[in-house]
Image 1 (cartoon, helix red, strand yellow):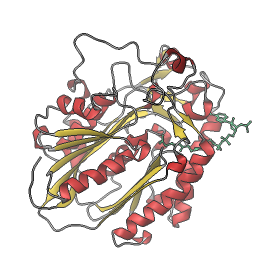
Image 2 (image 1 turned 90 degrees about the vertical axis):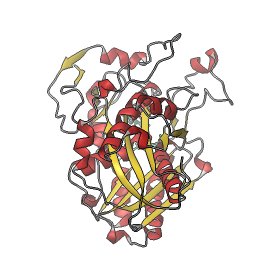
Image 3 (image 1 turned 30 degrees about the vertical axis):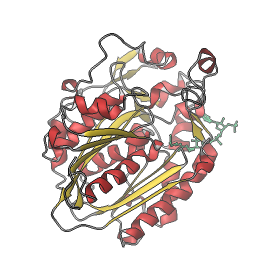
Image 4 (image 1 turned 45 degrees about the vertical axis):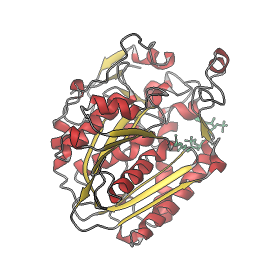
Length: 398
Ligand code: ACO
């Protein structure tokens, strides 16, 4: 950590990682009473990624983080601070950020996790921005990483269809260039505290045979209340951030929203009077990856040619808490750097150290393992998979 004079903040690096294993709506039809038609029409989700048994939140976050560092043209040791947003850490302690620090080969950064559920990446971005603006750090790695498929109740069709795994990251850097406009808005509304929650495992209800028997270690959600909050808050939080940047919504080139539900995103577009071509959507292929969703979408949008220097962007998310957050920022980096950073990192080369005297039980939930045990190689469009990831994915046969 440094104690330099306050600086302007630039986004210099971005990267993502998605596990190669695809879980389609057809696969889910084999686990719960649902249908592809219901899932697509109510959510817009067609498939999501599932981490393999050897993957963890830290391993996915490390790959995405290293890609963001390479995109920025930096070395791991240039990073002063690592902030990782997640609701699915590898362990209660140490922080997942500490594991990522070692896995990416950084020897000098401070590292900590942020808990703000699906808004976590935006909260972490705001924190990183403040560290740089105050002069306390020059390069901060901000990661959103989630392994949600291990915390879902595969008997609850209203939640298990929504979520997927993955990681995204950005590097924020101090710059001597003049500051570009930025607006950040964060909100927390505890009225929604028990609308999306994971009841057991914490100090209020420590893990026990009884909490496990009650299924209290899985995500629970009041879908309708969450939906109402999301549609209200995504628009108002975006507008607040846009206003703080000194813009109106008509100035915004691209909104990158939390990828939770297509109907929520369409409602927000309507509320903001913006056409859908100014809103980036990739939830059809990933589902809701919580804190990872905005940075994965950002990396895809930039690498896919949707962003150019000078564009005005808004990142906006909502999540458990209820939390919400938005960042309005002007893009200054060269979009062509993204594929270079992706190609520079082979996921197989990024290793999270395991404890020497302990190994976990099989982490894949039995219902999911059953579907994943019967793989059939199929040709999938992997244009969204970054170079360096496995060239071919498999998914379960029906
Ligand atoms: N397949 C088939 N039927 C289903 C499914 C399913 N997967 N899930 C629910 N249904 C049924 C219900 O049982 C209900 O049947 P009933 O009428 O016979 O009782 C019917 O479909 C309608 O259910 P609703 O809950 O009213 O469906 P709704 O249109 O509200 O959609 C959904 C549910 C998709 C969960 C929606 O409410 C939603 O997206 N909410 C927001 C969730 C969200 O974004 N969460 C993000 C959390 S962010 C974080 O921090 C983790």
